[in-house]
Length: 276
Image (cartoon, rainbow, N blue to C red):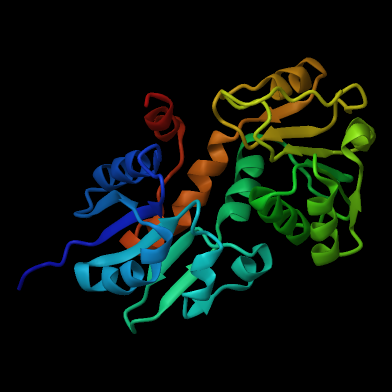
């Protein structure tokens, strides 16, 4: 009897830049699993047809990224509560019964990154979140889930922040971008979800003078690994956590569901992505 080799991949457009195949390929080799994980450049108009065909080709699941994270929810047969709350999916499972299961592990990856790399108590005080895009939605949902009682939110376009407040409720306080530095006063968890400070993007210029040395500070940007935002926080005495760990931790649940092994995330795993 022939063994069916499980396939998975990352769907997006463009997608050649994604490091996910390096990561999953490393785990497949580490655990001696016969399987493959590949780049899948799929146009928006073809997404539904591709997803319907993939199980017949041996695919057990896939990750989804820009521009498909929202639109895939309308195609999936089953959408988890957290994917529905965030309004996007990043992990798909092709179930044996033929149904497409959509989940979002971004929030899980965010929380596990902080828990693994800092002495972090989410209930220690308010959280301050910069940005109101898709990543911010996952961060806010996960912070509320682990018991943060107040989230101060600021975005360059305040309308997007207002939308998140309307969706997530009274624990969200919106602060105008020109006053964003003020929301750091007493904040115990500080998160940059914007692209500011990323290679090729504008600098993160919000003043960090009000930052408490007791705060845990993280940046979802991981190119560069140590952003100016994190360096300034470190100089202030804060615990800092880079964004690479979130990428690693969000990938682990999908790998386990597709290939049957929960991958360990260690320094060797980090180096796989840092060496690319």
